[in-house]
Image (cartoon, rainbow, N blue to C red; front, side, top):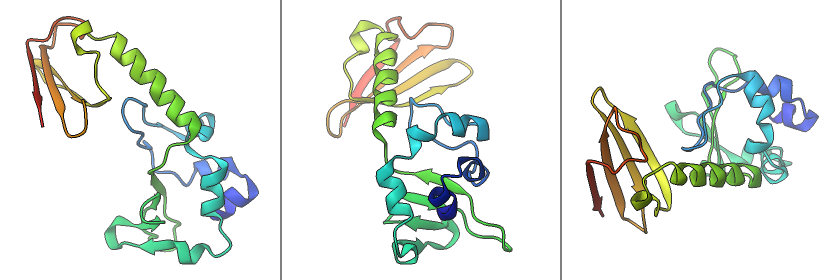
Length: 167
């Protein structure tokens, strides 16, 4: 991975990613190499690349057993190296400016798709769908969350059947 970034070889780097590459909701996961190449700037910026290719990269990486290897306490995670096969990048826990802008736009679109009484939240946490219900959990302020639920056949812009706040 380090060599790919030093050479700006995005094609080779795309082969070293574990797909789907997870993104924080509501940003969709990256499904494959082609999508990774399209969305590269959403994941990597100059600051992160410089940290990864630092002059002494070995001192910045820590092996964490079965979890793999992390950079700077968890900024970047790579699978374990099995039988000489280079580990795959599976998580980056930092947002680029482009990634933050995309996430902000998607959250705003998400808010506008909801019933007006549900539009006041900091960020969506999870949306689940069961056979009978659509369930949504949103982060409100600090340690407060809101649980909402609709029958699966009702749209999210409808008043939910259940709505409760919890801390």
